[in-house]
Length: 360
Picture 1 (tube, rainbow, N blue to C red):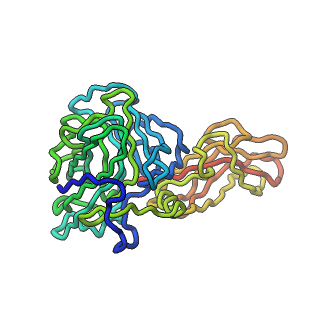
Picture 2: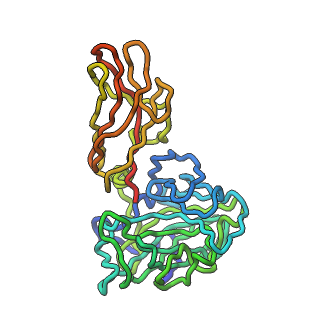
C-alpha cells in the first residue's frame, strides 16, 4: 500500500482524464433525498445521505447527518456523531459504506491478472486524532483490503490519499450487482479488523489498531470529497454538476417529493384522474431515471386523508383512503393502483407520494 498525507491543493491535475473518473457517487455529500439534512440514527444497512449507508452491530451508537461544515471547494460533508462512549467488543463493527455497481468498475479487471490499481482520496475532519481505518471488499465479502490513514490535528481538515493494488484473486462482479464496497471504520473489533496494506481472503471492515469514533461520547467525524479512481495517483476531485449527481443517485433511489423535502406522510402530491364506478384504477408512473433493477415501492399518504402508506381519492364530497398497491414494476416505471368506490361515474382526484428503492 502507498499512503500519502497531502494538503489541500496538492492533488495532481486531472487534465488527462475524461468521463466517469470518480467511481464514488455523491462523494461531495450534496444529495440527501431521504433526510433533507436531518440527523438520523441508522439501523444496520440503512441509507443515510444518498449512496452512503451505515453498518453496525449495536443500535443507537452514532448518528449521521448532512453537514455544511466543509473544506474549501466543498459545501457539504457527511457528519458522524458518537452517541455514547461504547467499548468495542471483538465482534463489534461500526462503519459508513458505499457499494459501487459492478458495471461502473468493470474496467478495473479485478480478479484477473490484468487487475488495475485504484486510488482512494478524501478529506476528513474529526474531534479525535490518531490512526483511522477502512476497507475495500468484494460482493461476496471474502476479499478485503484494509487501509489506514492518520489524522494528526483535531478539528482540522486533512486530505488523504491511499493507493491500492488491484486484486488478482477472488470474484469481482461486473454486472448491476455490487462490484466493490468502500468502508470508513468508526470502531471495529478484532474479529473484523485486518492487517493494513494487503489483500486477504476474509471479511474485514477496518484495519487493526484503528481509532474508535464510537468509543468517545460526542466525538465527531466529518468526511467529504471522497473519490475512487483508476490509477496510482490522486487527482483533483471530480465535482460533477448537481443535476448529474442527482441523476446518478436516482438510479438507486428516487422520490416523488420535492428535492429538499424528506419522504413523509401528510405531504401532498396530486394526480388528476378519471374513473368509472367501483373499479381498481391503475396509473402508470414513469421514473425520472431508469433504475438499476426493478425497485421496491413505498407509498405515503397525502394531506387530505388519514391512513399512512395509502393514497386517497375525492369521491365528490369527502376524501377517502383507498386500497393502494402496485402492478407491474420495471426499471422504467411502475403501475400504482387504487380502488375506486364511487357510486356513479365521477371525475376525481387521487393524492399521495412514493419512493422507489433499487439500492445495491
